Image (tube, rainbow, N blue to C red; front, side, top):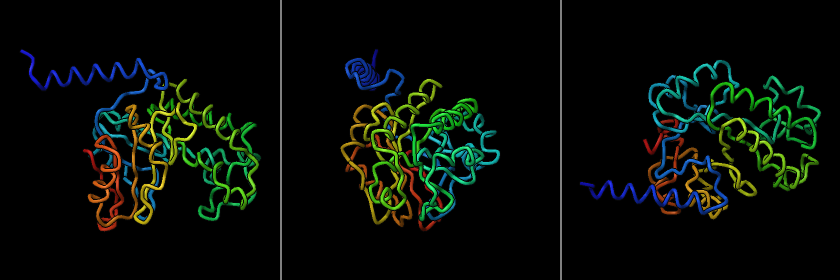
Length: 279
């Protein structure tokens, strides 16, 4: 005898399959998620310490785990992290060159000459119709060989910021920048991984998920309809919220704006560390 719960599960699977077959904008390899998942972040923080690898290995299970695989020794932990059902995302900045990366000297010809005032170890990408694509693809090759599941594209929105363009004078046009991150995402797919957009989904329909950075004094600042469009087709949507005294309240507010499928991680100002929801 089929229970009501099983019937509901069958109906859910039917509609997921129907959605995949009728919406031409959804890639066949996109996993349709029916619920939010926990998020861990080793790659970056705003005010306090990021998640530590030892804590991730101990606590993360069936989560999205963002790491900077180019940090010393991080890549050696990827298989261990994945052994508990986690999806590992690899951080790369595609809109800047970072002085502390091994490939910085190779990138310098494609960067502006003035460091980013907010992050003085970074220089904005000046041109993309050049060898910088090969440099980024070499990074992606390493990430694939290390066994990551996702690549997160930080600073992919630099081309849309007219204020930054006026200050730093980068030459790349919006059209060139869009072609650049789309080509890199296509390459990620060729390597059997998924693309995580960062802070925007404009001209990024080939991406498989998006992570937004949220602040206690600036919430939901992005295009809400764009985020909702990713949720509507079952793509992973993550909000990484910073410096908050009441993380639970903010998470409830975001779920009202979107739905229960939204994934959420919060930098707790009281605990001075990330707290992980959806576990």
